[in-house]
Image (cartoon, rainbow, N blue to C red; front, side, top):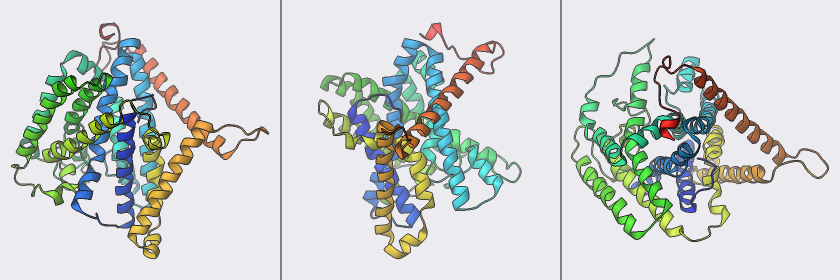
Length: 407
């Protein structure tokens, strides 16, 4: 979701993942069933693609930034982006609260990421992971990537043990602690809580880091050395996941649904995640050395806006449209409206400004709002960094080396 210039194949993969995600959201909103299990499996690759791309950006953007400018500069950039993701996540919470009225208490739980907000899961994930970026970079500079990947794989091997952990008791009548554990560790068995958890998603993050390192100098020899062991790992873990009992069958039907994802089942990470990795690598290899038309990159370039405001439009899409047009046509119309808005936003941001007579046009207003929001989050992140710099390291709750020893 970053705005830095990147390898075009990764932007193509991001655009593809966004199109899949928005298609799924549009179908859910109008009540359209999944056309087939194969279509469902393809759609489910969208979230793993975004997580893999997040890991790739660590290697391509964040680790080099920390090396060149230091950890504080890294923190300021990543926290500004985290603030943006959270504010757009909050916009989705408010939209759902208005469209489907429920209690203010539950809305507050959703705003604090302790509820279940439809369509906005990846914004929540990115907000948390971008906030933790200094810690991730610190870890990757201290621990070899292979060991990080081994530890992340061990989490999935411990799936039956994690699911055996009893749920924490409710607080004020709400499973607050249970949702917090589901979000971070993924021990719960309530399928309404969207996965993957932060801990279970780390295996895809670290594979994404390996992908990003390979993308800097993609060669056939390095391809084998990087992706052959990863491919064997995914095949072995995918085969093992089929033997996990007690959580329903692992077949085309279950893989096309949300249950395995929300349970943090290893089949989701290593079967759906493996397919996602193939799609991303295929996008990079297929576009390497070629010039891609800008239209194919717009969705990926504006994915933050798309998930923020595109999903708000989806949330408010009236059910009566499906009653008049049918669910298939209504889903296509809704998807077309959202994509049109994304392209209009992209044009406004790139070419917005004052007209020749000095008046502010609609694209200019959109451009001003977008740049103003960007300045606001950058200032908020800058102030946070300046505040933390003033806190003596001995008083910091979890001090992390942020300067010379990591530079």
